[in-house]
Length: 200
Image 1 (tube, helix red, strand yellow):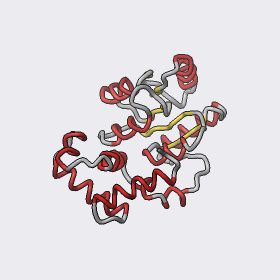
Image 2 (tube, helix red, strand yellow):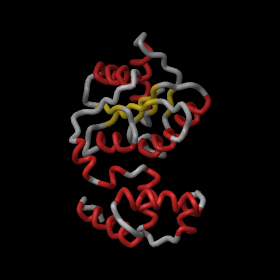
Image 3 (cartoon, rainbow, N blue to C red):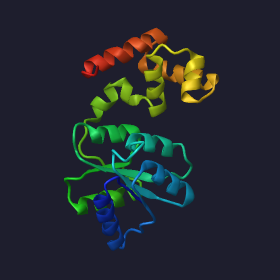
């Protein structure tokens, strides 16, 4: 299945996969919500998505799909700007191909991912592991950001639409991954990490 918000890109990619006998295109979508809906209705083994797929975006779509049984493996096909490939890997994508690459490169990546491989351009995985924020699940990152606003457990539960017990479970994992002992240290870590990345 292919998901891209650009109509021309969506049409071109559809034709590429329809012409290739190694693939069977089951659906296309111009939005992340449409992509998610199609995956819920029909078996999709492999998805190719734009990182900026409206309106949820690629990272959020990957996060939602990871919670679904028999979710498709996803290849992010996007402009190679900044650290999109690293973000796609951290979010849980199985592959990344830059739009500047050849069509054949995209097809090779899709075939490899369909066979269970992870395919990314060279990334220094050591730096990925050294930043504790990158070890957090998308849910834990959302929790940390909400925590930085000074919310109580009850407010966190309401904001994230989860139970208070689930909040406690996530906080425990969060503190362990960040090597901190309490909320204040976690919040301090969050702001110092943002400062080191040059974020305001």
